[in-house]
Length: 212
Image (cartoon, rainbow, N blue to C red; front, side, top):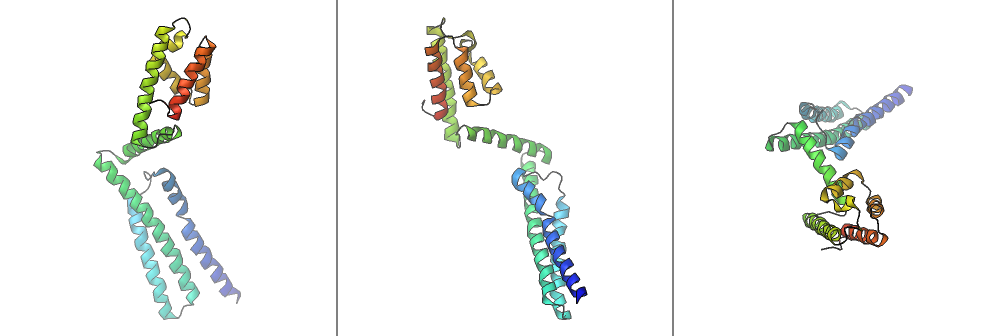
């Protein structure tokens, strides 16, 4: 009796571990799409191996093997095969995209990661489509014209670091990622409180999409 219990314990342990074995890889691919270190041939052979095990389990029925053991093997290999096929599909898709763009897989993945980061940065600013991006760029240009005009009309009021040009604002945008801190910065560098407030409102309106 103890022998049979041990067999069942180790069988279901193997079922669980066989499935868990592929989960970390699938999780990583879902979040990063990184398949650079993955061999496509491994995941071509893995489903074939799973099919062989499932066939073996089915054949065990004719040997009067307890159905619970047959089910255990079939479940483990079926789940593993599904995960392995998913990994293989993503791997082949990445290779196809790289080939289509005349890149190695590593070059393609670096390009993909960069584009993904840029999309996340744009999304953080409320830019979720090409139209949003176009509007945002128009807002940037409109903003530059307004501040340049203010600088010309009130050269003694607006600080030189703002009036100097778009290059300074571009540098600030890169070095101060937080929108609220960026607004505070432009307030502080203006020498006149009223003008500082005006500039802050211009920036705030730009990020809220009110300038068009």
